[in-house]
Amino acid sequence: MFYRTKTLMTLIDPRPISGFKEFLPEEQLILERMKRVIIKNFELYGFSPIETAAAEREEVLIAKAGENTKLIYSLSKLERANQDTGETQDMALRFDLTVPLARFVAQNYGKLAFPFRRYQIQKVWRGERAQKGRFREFYQCDIDVVGDGKLGLLNDAEIPAVIYGIFSEMEIGPFQIRINNRRVLNGLLEYLKIPLEYDDGQSTMNIIDKAEKVGIEKTKEMLTSLAGASETQADALIEVLTYKGSTDETIKWLASKQYGELYKQGVNELTEVMNIVRTLGVPENACVIDLSIARGLDYYTGTVYETTLLDNPQFGSVCSGGRYDDLASNYIDRKLPGVGISIGLTRLLSALLDKGIVEPNASTPSQVIIFQMDPVLRSDYFALAAELRKAGIKTEVYPEETKIDKQSKYALKKGVPFGIFLDQKRKDEGVCTVRDFGSRNEEKVQIKDVPEYF
Image 1 (cartoon, rainbow, N blue to C red):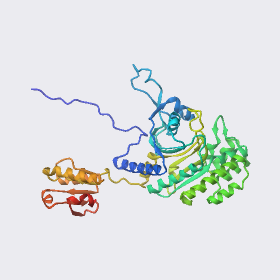
Image 2 (image 1 turned 30 degrees about the vertical axis):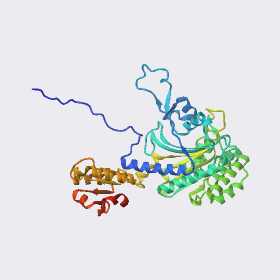
Image 3 (image 1 turned 180 degrees about the vertical axis):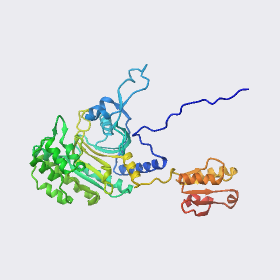
């Protein structure tokens, strides 16, 4: 006599890696809807999609990472033996979409029409300490306009119009796009003789960028103790950072100050951008000048943006970016100025879910489910499903022959809004029963009219 023995095996803990967010189907469906809204609005303004490889050569990423090289994930095979020279090239995962864009534009310079308007929605990876609201893997949704030699300010002004269209359609609460110009701040620092850098490359602009978070008193202390500004210099800078007024009042106030040519250029650019923003239909209260907006990254040179949800300022900026003078100087001997913004979609959706601003509903895109009431009618179920799909109705047929009660529980658990019941008696009458699971109402509908009914 032979006996079957059960093989013992060690189960692997199914926990995901910390900082690598995974959404349930009902949450992922919200993410996909948000992506569709973003893509729709990007394309309304003529931006074209591109995708770049997840990995870049390490030297490409390191050249732009600055002090953040510790955040870069390197890429290698588990088994390095017997690799040929083509596979041993050092590679790493991209930490943003701007560096790959620069490489892409330089590589395809002769094939692209300039100004080059692109959008890109892909994942990026950063080796940060995982915590609430900060992820190691996340979606970024970027648009950029890249010019060849020069780029007009109309492009800067269109960005707020794109942002306004996206967040209005998402219906996630009141929001505000805040705009400034780095030349205003750089010109002011230059005129006041406050150094742009201190302590071997630390940026004074980073102190300004943190002002909203740490408060004015702490900012003044940092300006004097770290950047070496005098009390008078710090007070003059803070006067500008804290000024609040309407767009017209702010522009008039800025123009009344005599802080040198670079400052004046920044004020003129900011004035022109805001005038165009108005003509593009963005309401005054949705897009405002905020002179404290700096964006800490050194490559921003002109217009800068931050977007905040007014009812949830603790989220920080949900969409930010700005203008840079030279995108691809590391790769091509051409001046390629650009302007763009980025939406951190994974972080945004996670925050919205945590706060209950958006709530998961169905875990399926199906609008209709057809129940199997009689195996003899299986071909009828599939034929009806085909007609519904042809009409654009997302439809599934319950895949097994089982009790109707079990089929209904399945539909309810997934959140399918409508169910169709068809047995031989109904077929002989030429009708089926449509049940609305929300209201629990039922209605008899002619089988031929079902697609039109939905």
